[in-house]
Image 1 (cartoon, one colour):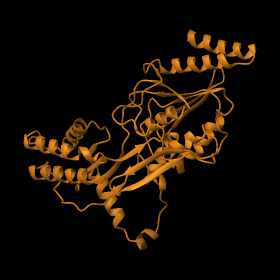
Image 2 (cartoon, rainbow, N blue to C red):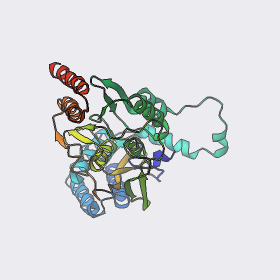
Image 3 (cartoon, helix red, strand yellow):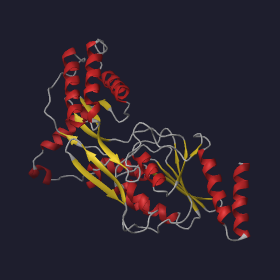
Image 4 (cartoon, one colour):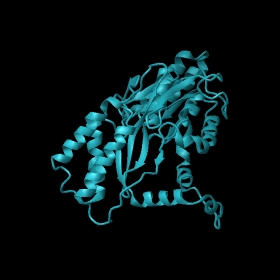
Length: 356
């Protein structure tokens, strides 16, 4: 699936490893894991100018004895994650203790084509099954008082899975007078689902949405808006995107793009600031690591939101962001209304919201 090897995705590297027993973590394994992590940072980390500093800091922490008394592998993974994020100020770094996942992926990779072709029992893609339990990331699609559309999107699942749900949601709100897209709990996801949703707010002629560079392979790629979408486009109406500290990665990218293309007003708190896409690799038989490996650039700003987060157009606390956005779109509709009857409808909705 193309979406799984695109921006803000996970790529699997089946790496040669050194096996360790499943007892307590030893000094030899700690040192081996750190050296392997440093090698992967050397080859994958997209912030090339930071590689030497990050690896040196990790060596210094190891030499200081910080990890000497950590005998639990899961605890070791958690501490390494904290340290890598502190050193780099990049929240996409993560180390995990995942021996079952590693064994499963290796076994799958080692199956021959002939063996894979013999399927005795029905198979299921459990990733897709779990994604479906959350409606592929679209938690809510509503029409609020005053004919205001509301979408709550918690994750951007792969487009092959998510596109029908996006189409249905956009069809549901197609006749509203304004739209609020709530990304306050959006944890990221897989491109190009972001640019597909963004396409509903552009004319059919494709527009460059973003460019990216993936350091492990040297690949450069780009995303554009889509010439065809599966529901009416949402043009010439107020759009607000809600964000906050839990808006992460691809959720941030969508908000950032909509803001700088002047397609939406962003309301809420500054986002996490995790712009770099990741690579995902096995370290040994027990540990995996995700490394910020891909830099994305917005064609308008010629940069991204790494470290800084998406800055709202209208600042509001997480608790107040929805009410502020609701009031904002109603005010815009009142200002642009052509008839008094329209004004009365919007004012009534605003008064009802104020009394809630």
